Length: 100
Image (tube, rainbow, N blue to C red; front, side, top):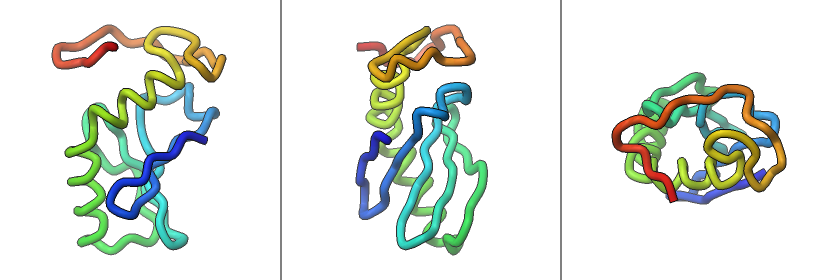
């Protein structure tokens, strides 16, 4: 499970997440939130207070490009990435997308 630590929070996704749009599970001290990356939005929050959740959203916004690169390196943009898992949904490139 690819993990990036930002500001003391673990931003992580799982191989089973391939069928969903880009997102991160943000974990710290037994708490978890699911954050969509396109656009940044909270899907759910389990345990974080509002101040922590606001900080997580700001960190996700500030590191969005880096997190999307991790996602697409793993799953691939239109098919199989390094994981060998085919993404369930395909989407067209949008203005502002970064492709390396």
